[in-house]
Image (cartoon, rainbow, N blue to C red; front, top):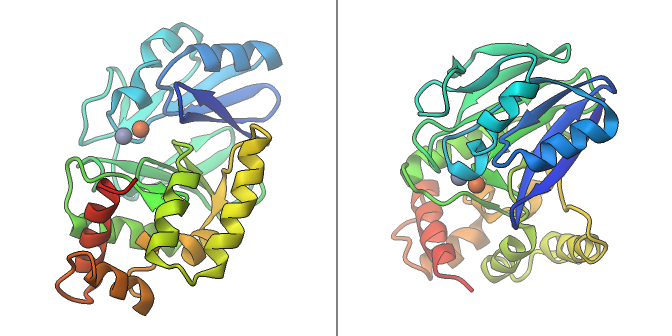
Length: 256
Ligand code: ZN
Ligand code: FE
């Protein structure tokens, strides 16, 4: 099974999973990169998975329908281009012979879902859209800090070796913020150096892993003393994880 990040727009990735004959794509915000990849490897498009309703994740769906030999799957609680199979927490789907579990992860949008495969194609795979980024998390457009905290906590509990497939290449700017939050975190500095070398080669920094994110991502480290202290210096009124996350998210919104 091949797992590929197809670059789209300026910093999106459309994830493609294929077995040499059939492919699945996640969050096709535009169709051209998908069609090019399907044609290059002569793949049948077997399904489309969608995590949330934003245009940079759904904009290519209709143009891909003529090529599509299976369903579009998407979040039950959001409006995405019809027709699609509406999914909610705990439901399972089988694509390319792999089982994916749906996890509700509200926060960035109110009905955002993630897709998790526990293994079978190598290490587990997580398609998490704009909820969890490497070194960061999505902006809270429709949800609350408490919702995002719960969503991130569920993802953080997945196996450490899980391949984390985020929908944007935001890693370097996220790590710049992570360094401001935790100047003494060696893992952040080491990882940033590795990511810089990847980007210098034009390569994605993704997929990440849950184990890695637990080491470097301040939004998964809200229970850490150093992270809480930094948050308190930026508006958090307590060490409660939700208060810490809320302060970090606000700080990050204005961080350059
Ligand atoms: Zn989004
Ligand atoms: Fe996005």
